[in-house]
Image 1 (cartoon, rainbow, N blue to C red):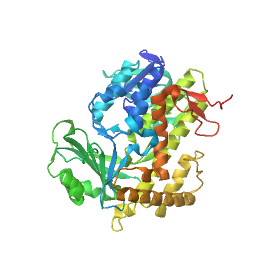
Image 2 (cartoon, rainbow, N blue to C red; image 1 turned 90 degrees about the horizontal axis):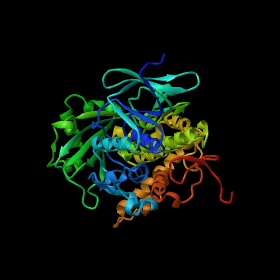
Image 3 (cartoon, rainbow, N blue to C red; image 1 turned 60 degrees about the horizontal axis):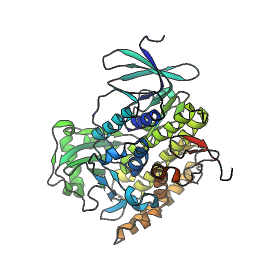
Image 4 (cartoon, rainbow, N blue to C red; image 1 turned 90 degrees about the vertical axis):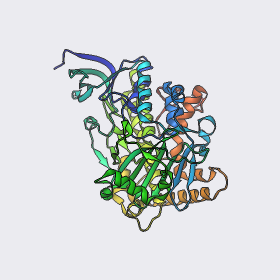
Length: 500
């Protein structure tokens, strides 16, 4: 039965975070009727405050919001600084490690997500999307052929329907719709962690020019993030494995300070700081950073983007990158299908294959990153030796990627993957050791690591496409028989070899 208060759109986007607002903007810019349904009212608190350049200079340049972000006063982040691995001293990973990211785009931002997300959502509205906040989606409208819309309750408590050619679930890790796409959500045993975090005023900063960098510090029970959000405000969180949950239970104030005491470097940076106890940052929070992936990312009429489809450990700040990158891929697919340029199955097949590949690249990078840190007495770090102990985890990864090759190397089984990860981890650790010993800031040693090259590759491609447009280097398909982006980055097109 169709409710009397129902409407028709080309696309309904469920969720107004970075994934939803990005996709809404990219589709609305093509003149399509787009509705965004967000259950909360912005601004609202969200974690995931450290960005990568591909979001700032790639996706946000394509949507047209990059200049507004530049005016927002967010701290610039040149890379990441780590106390991690064999070196007793912190070492720095700079975005200029990649030849594609040198120059004026070799930075990102540290952002207060309440401000950043509102900028993106408001921008989606300005470029043509209809944004409705306080609207909770309860279910999809579907028949045997496809999903055809959603049912939701608006801000006044009125039940409504919105019909559309496509529904995009961008509602995050708490998505109520992800199961509607079919398949199942599979959780990673290796990456299951808990984070206890809060905000501090007056914390120490890294020496220039890296004062805006995220500082990540490994210690016996896990690792800390330390993110400068302004000249004085800092986001600080401790990540521990779920089996160590007793360390963050009970009095959360005592628990956090006890973990700080275990990590002298973070203790030094917080020596003169005071925890924020009032306002939106006054609460200590626990986040379950349980990495997972959906075995299916789309069905006719329904597409999962961002955390609704998959999530991976946050140590390398990949959350907003994967959200906005997947939104770009899905927007290209929807734009192309609606315009009749590519059939739906091929367009959304390209979206899923590329999103799985990018998730897989970060997964491999993070396994190598964790594996290179050795602490023989630490339960946390011994549990991070997936290449030695956890064949089921690796087999699950093989099934996730399926026929999609991560890079140029085909995946076969867990045993082969374990050996490959072992080689990559050793290669990465050697590159970090060389970097840490270096007297200058040359990133050349780090870029010799294959996992570093892979994790920077696609983000760099998106940046170049956004920056240069039709003058960008001609793309070739990522997969045999695959599609390529149009010169403006908004559509998929069949690949035509030169001379055809």
